[in-house]
Image (cartoon, rainbow, N blue to C red; front, side, top):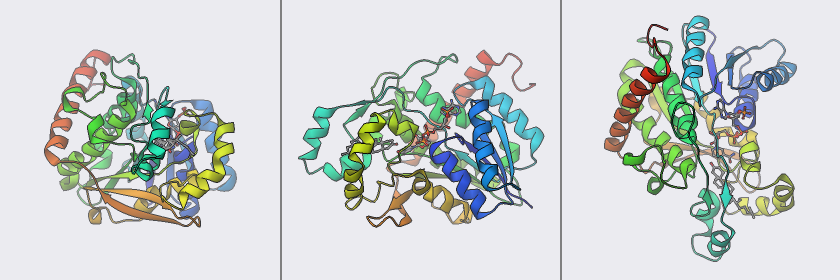
Amino acid sequence: MRKVVVVTGANSGIGFALCERLLSYDDQIRLCLGCRNLQRAEAARTALLSSHPTADVSVLLVDVGKVTSVVRAAKELKERYKKVDYLYLNAGIMPNPQLSFRAFIKGLFSRNVINMFATAEGILTQKDRITEDGLQEVFETNVFGHFMLIREIEPLLCHADSTSQLIWTSSSNARKSAFSLSDYQHSQGQEPYSSSKYATDLLSVALNKQYNKQGLYSSVVCPGLVMTNLTYGIMPSFFWTLIMPIMWLIRVFTNSFTISPFNGAEALMWLFNQKAESLDPLSKYHSCTSGLGNNYVCLSKMDVDEKSGDLLLQKMLELEKEICKKSIPDYRNS
Ligand SMILES: NC(=O)C1=CN([C@@H]2O[C@H](COP(=O)(O)OP(=O)(O)OC[C@H]3O[C@@H](n4cnc5c(N)ncnc54)[C@H](OP(=O)(O)O)[C@@H]3O)[C@@H](O)[C@H]2O)C=CC1
Ligand SMILES: CC(C)CCC[C@@H](C)[C@H]1CC[C@H]2C3=C(CC[C@]12C)[C@@]1(C)CCC(=O)C[C@@H]1CC3
């Protein structure tokens, strides 16, 4: 049976590199590019087909920052496929990033310097906004829209006789102290990205508890620091080009400077080849690149507790009910 693989945020960066790598590894998969913009999606499809002309690559229009779009896309998936074997929850945003140069310089001369380069702790903030669904945009895009997608295509993911995998693109920037259960959308603070990625980690743990019995497994990936549209939003591209030699140098001290989208997709690709049941639900899978440019995957324990995961899942389910009632009038019949 040909595997069905759905990737959100597939038209650029890590998502696109993952698609290329998946097709190079197995051009028999049925690959579905989940994108919010048709033109960009078609461009990605054309590029993938030019190197893999016989591959089955289709486009699914989905804006994970809009509940109605997610519900429509889920309906489309249910019409197209009987099963989704891999769902890569990769689309993500970091809007209006602000780098604190003061904190960065201070960090350079502290004992925390390696951790600062690996996680951006204490040097990066963002400005969030409210979406038309009335949610914080970073939370809705990075977490809730994806959660809704999982819930909506549950019958395609849960099968008694075979397994499916959810693979979240999280981040080393995910930090417990940026997240609070009482403000899980992060409407109060200045680190919505960090909070949303921590929420991803918590949610993955809770989803495993909820769904493993039904054959669905969830894992979390950390791609490292990758040069993509997201990072070019932090500083202009000429600056990145200028400091590239320094980036190669830093890679000698921290394996998290994966730099290219190909390298960043290493752990996402690695998980594709693993037996879902053998994965550790409490570990994060990191894409790593050595000073010499060799790629490998390493594991770290997540800073999460199961109770918080369960509480977050409960809150997400309540929010789902509330939002669907508001945004989709004849929800569940649609
Ligand atoms: N770059 C890095 O260093 C790191 C990135 N990550 C994570 O990796 C993931 C991929 O990002 P990356 O490749 O770096 O950045 P890109 O900006 O290149 O890719 C992000 C992708 O997500 C899509 N996307 C954004 N918002 C939505 C939405 N509302 N609905 C559907 N698709 C959407 C984008 O579509 P469009 O082109 O239309 O905007 C794009 O295809 C993100 O989750 C990011 O947080 C994690 C750690 C490090
Ligand atoms: C000399 C240079 C290498 C200086 C670069 C400083 C910062 C711009 C970067 C240091 C750590 C980086 C980092 C990210 C963005 C760029 C840095 C802040 C991320 C936040 C990008 C998105 C993620 O998900 C995690 C990354 C962690 C490290």
